[in-house]
Amino acid sequence: MNALQTKYAKDIKAILAKYPEDEKRSAVMPLLYVAQREGGYVSRQDLADIAEIIEVTPTEVASIVGFYTLYHDKPEGQYRVQVCNDLPCAMRGADAFLQGVCENLGIEVGETTKDGLVRVEAVMCLAACDKAPMFQVQDCENITYYEEQTVDSTIKLVEKWRKAGAKKK
Amino acid sequence: MAQSRGEEEMSTVKGSHILLRHRDKPALSTFEGYVKDGGFKTWKQVVTKMTPEAVVNEVFDSGLRGRGGAGFPTGLKWRFIDKNNWPHYVVVNADESEPGTFKDREIMEKNPYQFLEGVMLTAYAVNANRAYIYLRGEFWRLAAELDKQIARLHKEKLLGKKLFGKDYELELYTHLGAGAYICGEETALLESLEGKLGQPRLRPPFPPTFGLYGKPTIVNNVETLANVPLILEKGAKWYRKFGTEKSPGTKIFSLSGRVVKPGNYELPLGTTYGELIMEHGGGIIDGRQIKAIMSAGASSSLIVANDKALATPMDYENVPSLGAQLGSASIIVIDETVDLKWLVDKTVHFFKHESCGKCTPCREGTYWMNNITHRILHGEAEQKDVDLLKDVAVNMKGKCLCALGEFATEAVVSSIERFPNDFKLKTAAKAVAGELKVTHD
Image 1 (tube, rainbow over the protein chains, first blue to last red):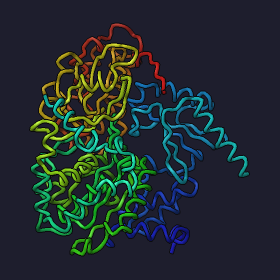
Image 2 (image 1 turned 60 degrees about the vertical axis):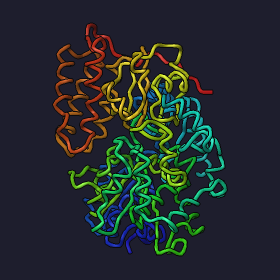
Image 3 (image 1 turned 45 degrees about the vertical axis):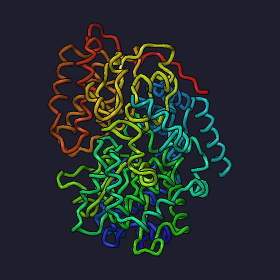
């Protein structure tokens, strides 16, 4: 039993049960999400642990991390604010919204605030084209949609996270 | 005309929707509400009284066509499943990622049990004991809800072993993707589900022969499957009352862009663009003129929005007369203030980002095109760059394993050919999206 297996034994068992016994490799995507629960990224140790569970090489697991946009190989902000500025959203003000949010936070698109709390990213279509401007927030535990947003409502959300973080400390 | 007939008929049948029935009956989103409305009666009826062949025949007779974009007859696809190779699988394509498409999400969020019953009936029809629902990773919370709903179906003995005392068992599982448009292509989706990079396979063989884990597999879109329970409950003949002869049934049109009321509209196939955009969608914002229509999300060519286009029925047989496809019926409306240089840069950027990198023309071509559109957008291009852009696009066509390489060129070529004024680079001024005031109620 490696570190990941020990920590999430029950979850990993449930994941493996979803796929035929000789097709363990199918579990790589859900296992990567499990690994990301801690710190919001997949560590080198996680790659090795997942590789061992599904009986492939760590390089093969790393290729999956590199291919898909929702896996990350380093910690970059506790909350990833992923704004859709694809065509339909952009026709309803998403570019200006994205810029406004970044200006307010004092960062550029693709950057993280100095305190490490928020990273703002421009992403591709999120299937919410009628509710633009919108974004999703990816943190360690969840991906949550926020639709029909304004710069003000978004900054308020960030302030809420900031306060919650300060309380925890 | 088809649309008036459909509208009348629809009001007499379970409210006014077939797929978005939750809009008439919100209680359908709960298990109790769905069962009270007659849900899962068909499931029991089918498992206890019908042969899989009879189920396939009924769906074949209904004329239902795949709603993911290709429009392939669903019953015919089911007939193709290889009966000499076992086990069989059903895989649901819930990777909804086409810019402008947001219909499957509403079905699964608001009318989940009808969707799940459709998956179950399909599995029975093709003798599959396992079905996987592949959802895009962003549908994280939705997948968690579906997991709870599937657990409930187990508890109610609607899933599991020895269903209704018969020798048939079925398990459903969700599987989350992780952000890759290409996984909406069915063979890339299967690769992804197998734990590999989401890259398309060479076809043939097609999934009904060689699918998940190399076994016969039926891959269907969410909306397609949501049709199945009512087709089996009320029969193929009833279903054919809606839509047109070649495009039976209703379709959810995802309407976005510069319209007053964007959203999903379930209408009979054969409804005109004009009715959807001007009546249901409330027309163009700020009373502007409509300029162009994208009929199938970012993958489609741009239709010149003239009177002929607005009078064209949205179905599989008529949209091609406009030099476009019905596809997933994600209609993006473009008004007169939108500069198509800006639009083309947006679509090309999308496909550059989403190309899986397997085929050289798509992997390189999307980068080259984006370099040129960027120059054009920022007033750094010469007129001959427009010709170069079109040349690259034309040379990508027909040279890739899957349709993505093709899709990436549709908006480019059609914009340059059908809206030449937008691509006369007289001044060095930057292209813009046009001013916009959008207010939310």
